[in-house]
Image (cartoon, rainbow, N blue to C red):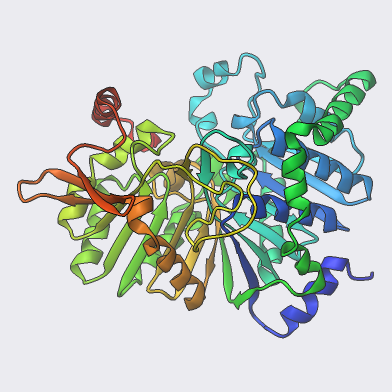
Length: 484
């Protein structure tokens, strides 16, 4: 069998770096979307796609179209979605599944399609769990993993609040490992073929849905975005073997899919391996986590590291920037003990993000064209670096839900160069992008930052109103931390 174009482009590079995989960070939303489109169009044999959220919006429809086009070319396309977030997608998923080369499965399925809330009444323990994994793998030689789901707000394709996030495009052995991991999820008992859950569509309805999807791609609403994707030359360099890649040993970390049924042992869970990696830290630990809920046990573990002399820096969302107030409540009540332990806390501030399309998050500033301005960005990335020598990028939040309820996926990259870039990205323009939280001598919280080059300080959570703060305080009293 002849090599695919992707294999032909990647094979000589991988051969020159035995035991390593090539990594290209994707901190920019447009680049991240373009990379997925590139892989969908370049795939010749297989396309394995696994996501927690897939919205029925511009980018979601464009990627559905790309999967359908790949299947039309004879590519074997498999789409695995967590069923919790497929509201309104039943007919579109059923239409895709009718293609002879495209199969759709739903993970941890909701047996009662309407009304969905009944599933939570009769089977809460199971349906409360989620497949939070995110991966997009072509021909088992190139993959995208990281924090992004599929929706306009992850790809800078909306004028509403967008998510600042981080993925990596990875080629070489790690892509094969992600493909193997996808296989065990696809074949797990929690993955149900969509045709067993959703009635078969009539031919007329299938044709209508396909026509609607094609029409959206031609509409003025998405024309500027689609043009911007086509104009990105850097990612097309992958097929020419010219894309800048960081070559390093890369290890895939993921939960056993049995975790979704509460049947994975401690050593089969991703948090066990992450604990071992963080526990080996001897000098520094830089964490970026959109949803950071350390719990009392986590605070003590971090405090122990700090007492050993480990410099710990944590960047998470401020109350103004978060999209989940309950999660912020789980974090907010742990701020004082973390600060007393000498841990540096930074909170992402809600501020205008411009230019919109070429924003850079965590790895420096970008440049280039823009398709308008967005109002603000909420942090969604999940990454950490240890001792400036290795870095994790994936779907895992440092919270009880990721540790105990959700399945997760990520990669550990043994690259001092990339780890230093992550750490430097946190520091770059820090005063303009985040509040530094501290304790006053009397134990009160303070938030410090800059605006227009001038220092500013707040005695209450900045950019918030009294009812928001009161709501978070009330939520912090509830016994819901295990759900966060």
